[in-house]
Amino acid sequence: MVGSGEQDMSAESVTLSALPPELDRERLPQHVAVIMDGNGRWARGQGLPRTMGHQRGVDVLKDLVRQCGEWGIDALTVYAFSTENWSRPEDEVSFLMVLFERALRRELRNMVEAGVQLRFVGRLDVLPQRLQDEIALSVEQSRQNTGLKFTIATNYGGRQEIVDACRAIADRVKAGTLEPDDIDRELFARHLYTNHLSDPDLVIRTSGEMRISNFLLWQMAYAELYVTETPWPEFDREAFRVALYEYQSRKRRFGGLNSDSTRSRRP
Ligand code: FPP
Image (tube, rainbow, N blue to C red; front, side):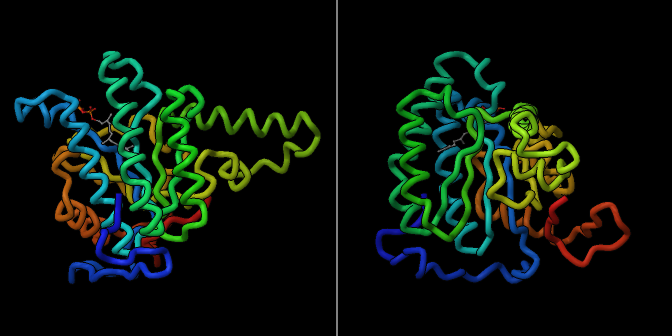
């Protein structure tokens, strides 16, 4: 999804590009999470089928991945498909599954060359087998990379993630390898799907709804929320710059009175 045929974008050679002057590199969010909403409404507004909105959404995501890598953001997590999205019409669900699979196949090489580490979070075992195969390949091929940590939440639900973590911890207690008194917030976070990531600093939601929709429920405890009316298919570099600018203008207090950092702390 990132990189270019003309430049050498291997992990070692990725250089940070200039930030817009009003953004402070030292205070960029380390981890940005995005609820990509509004594809269907955007398409309808253009007189197009909903699927065209999703198609366009992939291009916007490609550009955001590239931008995050170039600006030195450490992690990007996007909500591609929720556990609730199965209730959509069957043909839209099938379209999305094939779209994800094709996008991965088409963009994997570019992403690997750009140093991106791909991960997927969610209940992946019920996804179509071809998509699961493409996911396994993309994770394997990007495993050694040290650039942007790009995580795609697919068949993801925040409550399910918390229940799964509880089960994993309960199994360890039952097996006698963990004492109930050892369970604290750090340990709990290590049993979440996102144990490779710090908590998100900034959560962006496009298309105006003021909801978190079962996304990263535990992890976004202290995240800054940014909701824009812009639908996902129109969320371009300028829209992202505006979101980062707004983030940098906020004072993060993490429940205290002052903050010396704009970045998340672990619980
Ligand atoms: C929400 O818009 C969007 C989705 C459910 C799908 C998002 C997926 C992508 C942008 C592609 C991701 C690509 C990869 C490779 C994982 P909506 O349909 O809910 O829009 P609406 O609220 O206007 O109906």
